[in-house]
Length: 324
Image (cartoon, rainbow, N blue to C red):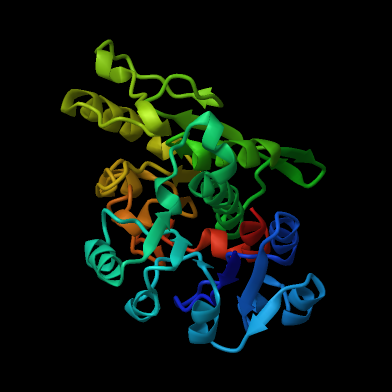
């Protein structure tokens, strides 16, 4: 087969679906690889690097699509990209078919095959293809780095001749893939790290609720958390209100597929936090876990709390993200 990687056209997207190294591995399996001119530049991969790896460089997206059997990209395709497909073509990308029904219908009308990487089951034998988890891992790590960049103190505590610095207190809400990456990064930087999750298997210094209902075990199939009952959600919010004034950094990661993000960090919780505290909301693209989050913006509240709603954390580490 001929496998071709398109250049991403979404604003701010720096990742590329095919790296020189992955192209080498595909060629070992007997496939030919093509990349659109400049597709890897933002991720640190020049056209010359691709050519050195035996990859052909196509001048345009149309030329690449015409020449290739399989077209790969990161973001969901545009209408123009879909219209270039035909029954002989297969497109592989993040597609989010549940939220992109018109695009699915357009692809159907072209007779093309579509493989949505976001629909790969999150099970053990599919881990090598679990691109969502790969990107969530990066997002969780980067969330802590962004929080540290906006936080006015060390993460780790210090006792020096110049004075004593207390360790930062970090709360990670939602300990799935992104949350676990955030926990590991925060802990390695020396912060006192707390975690909350409806699934009882996850770690850090766990924030427990005094709640006996079966719904307190929120594990669900497919690697996602289940929807909590109203009673459990109320108990959860009450616990967050109790600890909010003591937290320096809050990282929220709670998402349930094909739903708006649950509101877990309310305006009154933000108001109770200390000036200079930081909230990083990894659910911003779906409305945010924090009531005050603005997607793709960094805001400062009236009481001096910084809220970060960026949605491009994997793209900010484009070389690493593209490789994974």
